[in-house]
Each structure stands twice: as C-alpha cells, then as structure tokens.
Length: 97
Image 1: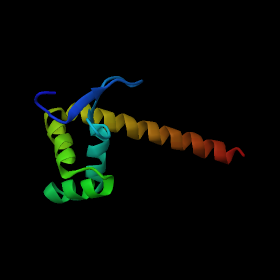
Image 2: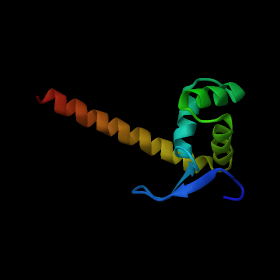
Image 3: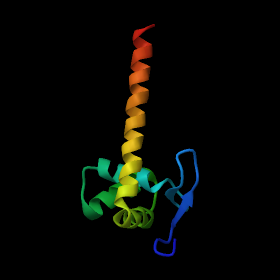
C-alpha cells in the first residue's frame, strides 16, 4: 500500500482484491478505461467523467495495474466468464418458458 497510495485491499468471496480507497475495485476501473476505446490521458479523463471518479483515482488504479497486470487481467477475465455464463443461463431459461 506504500507503493500505491489510494489503493487498499478488500476480502470477499473471490479472495483479496485491490480497490480504490473511496471507490470501486481496480479491475473495474481498468475494464471501464479499456471500454472507452481511447488511449492515454483521453482514456483516463473519459473514465473519470463516466464513472464519477477523479482523474487522480483513475491514475491510482492505472498505477497499480501497471505493477500487477496479471492480477487485474485475471479478475477481468473471470468477471467476463461469469457474466457470459449468467447470460447463457438466462437465455436457456427464457427459451424453456
């Protein structure tokens, strides 16, 4: 936490995860940043505007990600897989009604 001010760690059902002290998990910020389709400062500013975070908070998340990309990429991958599985279950249930 010394190396990344503004980042803390939360325990949960999927284990320990990095998050902004006053905001969402780092993986959520990085996922949102990627979805902007922008690069650099434009992506940071768009993410801050869209999410209601400050530019500093988005930069804190990016800083953590730059040191631990595998950890954050794994969280993003698992979230996508879980969302896809939930959508498949929903579609299957809708078809059987």
